[in-house]
Length: 302
Length: 266
Ligand SMILES: Cc1cc2nc3c(=O)[nH]c(=O)nc-3n(C[C@H](O)[C@H](O)[C@H](O)COP(=O)(O)OP(=O)(O)OC[C@H]3O[C@@H](n4cnc5c(N)ncnc54)[C@H](O)[C@@H]3O)c2cc1C
Ligand SMILES: Cc1cc2nc3c(=O)[nH]c(=O)nc-3n(C[C@H](O)[C@H](O)[C@H](O)COP(=O)(O)O)c2cc1C
Ligand code: FES
Image (tube, helix red, strand yellow):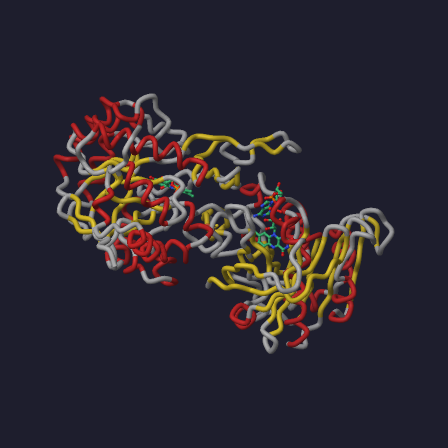
């Protein structure tokens, strides 16, 4: 038995494994089928100020070792989320993070303010969804990231993670800007912008033409970026991208992640996701690791 | 909801259609007509297939599979003794609750979920008309199974070498035109097949004042409601609501489906 618990910004996670935004809904379906008290936490689907219908079908296309999605942030919007979803989400027996997405700094600030009193463990600002046409451009501009984060900081005492997009020139500049603005953690990576084509119809498979690539295909990029960001900031890094097994979790922790999130795996193998903490425990034992936190950032580069 | 199923039998029906019989008591016990299972292959995402038939006493289910790509080709290699990982059963299936007479209309691989429904209708002693369309006799399947269950069987083929010549909708149109008014009010039509076919079927049913239910095959991510990868637009009163094919569907009341929202699907 190794110690799997991780404490960051005064919050203890019973283990470092969380479900990623967009792949766990609001926890309702999974908590009916599985025991969520075995995992570290769940990050909700993005909540936006107004309800969003998202894109038309097809929204999903499989690719080599990955998948593209163009859901387009379909969600009930803040009001309905607070009225009909939040109470159940708050009752989940694991750490509960609400993922937020908006079209302007003011809107992000409003969302954070509106959830100030909510019984949740933190906010994750999604600065990076590639699937919405009305321009979430903050994600690639360090100045905007810092400005946005510092404004959100003023209205909320909740821990705030900034979730970065890999579709940028310098991920470290973005991470440093989030830290300068007062973020409590950096989540990375979101999906990479991609395309899949049907040669018979000569059309993109996705109705939105492009979508976000996730799954094992993006893991090497995610690891590299977690490693770079870990070295550039002193706040915790939450790593994700293509995780499928306990070995992957340890790779991310060695690269610098304090916590990890699992996305695409949950779509095909939810039971495997809920078994991951136990698998991590066994693997840590085999590696002679008594406390999982001993692994964070212990990568020895050449 | 995650089960390891053992292949008991693999039966080839045509050059590109086969049936897998699986030992999976838990799913055999629960699955309703129109519900589906998510089958693991070596691909990243699972593949959804309707539960085509089941035997509760034996604890077996049957999946009818049309080979269209990587995953279905891989499944065609499965032999007795091999195991498969299944999730399910998922989705809102067909309900026979309001039916006094049943018409099933199937095209291509859309025929599979209708077999389970037809057997249920038979068990409930409901009069059943089956209208099935294929490309040709050589590519037809399950016609004998439906023949045994149906009071009326109307077959059609695009090549013209079996039954009526043309699309399944032509057989349906002819049949509906002969239906007398009092019968039609108690008749419910159930259909599955390509989107374009379903749209035509629903409009024919509407024109003849017959209630219809259709099963839609929208590409899926999870199959159990968490990813929002499977949107279907449905009319609810005057407004259009976007719901999940995998949870609120795959079976929808035909009149409520906004077919325009599914233009990119096959
Ligand atoms: C609720 C539901 C029930 C289904 N029931 C059956 C069934 O009983 N029997 C059967 O043979 N098929 C059924 N299908 C379709 C089946 O899931 C697809 O044919 C299968 O996933 C293709 O996998 P593949 O790896 O062979 O094809 P791929 O190599 O992935 O793709 C080949 C082609 O298959 C089509 N396709 C891929 N994924 C889907 C999908 N999720 N839905 C529809 N078309 C797709 C596309 O046109 C694609 O170009 C069902 C689909 C749904 C959503
Ligand atoms: C279907 C789907 C929907 C997603 N929706 C969101 C979202 O609403 N907000 C967000 O920040 N990330 C979203 N993501 C991105 C994931 O949270 C994650 O960053 C990404 O998928 C990489 O992790 P993975 O490879 O483990 O899936 C979504 C991913 C998928 C596959
Ligand atoms: S396929 Fe994931 S919600 Fe329907």
